[in-house]
Structure formats: C-alpha cells, structure tokens
Amino acid sequence: MKNFIVFIVVCFVMDASAQGDFLLLRKNDQVIQSYVKGSYFFCQLSTKQWIEGRIKTIKDDSVFMEQMNVQQVANFWGMPTLDTLKYGVIKIAIHDIYALPKKQHGISVVNDGSLFTIGAGGYMVLNLVNNIGQNESITTTKNLTNLSIAAAVFMFGELLHLTHRTYIVLGKKYQLYSTATPPTK
Image (cartoon, rainbow, N blue to C red; front, side):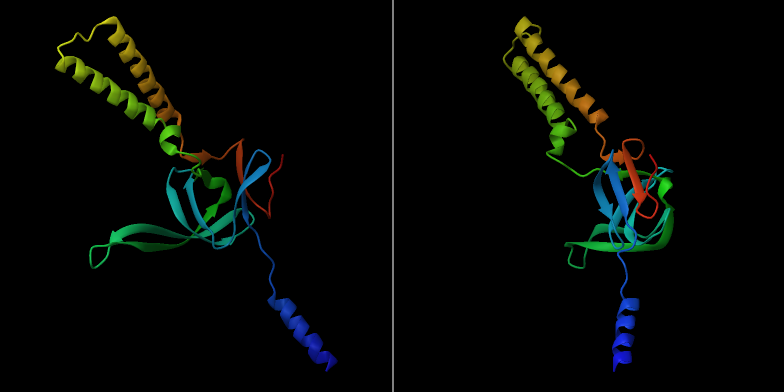
C-alpha cells in the first residue's frame, strides 16, 4: 500500500507542470504588460510588417506564434460576424520585434489632435460663410484676429496628429524580453 501511494504521488508530480516562460514588456524598470502561452499577441517586426496571433510557446530568445487574422465579415443573412483566418505557426526572434501597439488611455480624438483640427477648421469655414452671407469684409482686424487664432489651433492639432504614435517602439525606454533570458543592464 505504501508503494502504491508513492507511485500515485510520483505520477502526479510528473504530470504537474510549471508556469513556463512568459514575455514581459517593461518601461524603464517597471513591467507594464506580460504575455503568456495562449495570449493574443500583436506586434510589428523589424521589416515593418504587423502580425497577430496566439502565442503557442515561449523559448529563451524566440516566440512561436500561431499567426491569425480576425476580421469582421457579413454572414449568410448579411449581419456582421467575426471570422478567423489561421496561417500557421511561425517562429519570431524577440530581437526582431520592432514595436507593439499602445494601449488606448483617455480620449484618443484629443490625444491625436483630431478634435482641435476639426473644431478650428469648422470655425474658420463658418466664419467665412457668415461674413460672405452678411456682405461683411473678411479682412477686418477683429475677424483676422479670430481667423489667426483658429489657424493656430488648427496647426496645433496637426502637430499633435503628426507626433502621435499608436504604437510603442522597443529600444532604450521600452524592452521586451523572455523571463528565461532577462535583459542585461
């Protein structure tokens, strides 16, 4: 009986598996995202190609990912439904990953400048249409001041739009690494 209990315990111990490796995305010294086996992973390679899929295995310096594309298509009745297209398992070296998508925080129309651009552009068009409709001069000092302020707000919105990134570039500030091979400082 004692040997049987030892046999059962040994079988359970052999069947139990550890957590395994996982990927960590850190900003400076703080971990901001982690990926484990089965996580949905979306990244840009050093060739600037975006790929997505589920992580199958994480090794020391590479990720095996089942590449897939989830898209919305019309079903038999014309209603939108999700469709998954799987391409197969690919191996990606961690150092070949160039960028990851940024999580959306806050209102994106303010962060990317769209609200400023649309608001200022709408004001300028409305101002010009009202002045033409009322047969007033567009070149009055007050009107030129208002149009100049609107143009400055429009340019500010365009500047925000040009500098806004929807992805995180890996490098000095952001690092992605496997727990099997932590980065060196």
